[in-house]
Length: 339
Image (tube, rainbow, N blue to C red):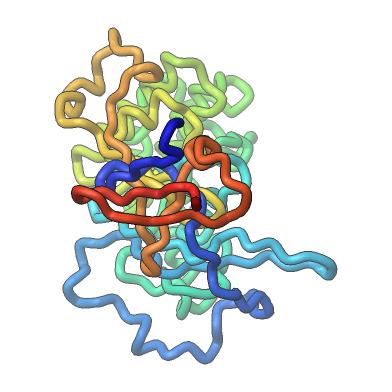
């Protein structure tokens, strides 16, 4: 580059490297604080349309020799009725975040509400009810979704036995029909293909009518046709008002979603929003979703006004250290190499 400068428009910043050094993090406390001021953690009355709200979320995994900071002050809101995808490289923190929301792990610090419930102040008994009634989980590993000695129908009915829902069999048959698996209702896990198992897993996750459906790589081990079918099931559920959060590496799937959140180094780094001209075309089979430019990407400023910048853009500056110059020209922020 002749000028050794790079224009970072505030509305179209790409995915990101921290411009500021984070403040030192206290890594000694791995449990949710016991003496937290609960008044500060109550759900705001004017935010009842928010299904997920995370503020400064931190998770530290500690062994005798090392500490791993999996989440580093993550901030995110997901509205009720939204279909959101989360992407990120292995180790970025996305699975950790999904486990927090699913009630499978406790945050170390920060604030986290799901459906108005404060996950920091829940007792173990309340957490059991939360996992049974508020969230449904679809795992990539089908061994975690189904009991191998039960039929598909019996697997879908199992969570209903735990909740005492009436008319269990009729509800289970309805869900299997919805995912196109009613004809395999008497089949056990070893009689179903990977894609069929994943469709049954969606029915199981919906058994107790959860407020929030979580899916961890739901198309990661199926063929393209099955992946399209699974996405169509999610889309239909979402059109009916189901809130869904999907963690995925599937580029074609993520490019069909209206909102995609990228996580890197334990923080939200960028968001992609589906372009209006593609909003009504997600069912079209003749579009190459992997190659098509279907979304607008935005960088995200955290609450300390830090932004991350892609490594490939930083490399263009050929920096000798971590110092850059910032200036504003014609409404754009300019990041340039020091003189």
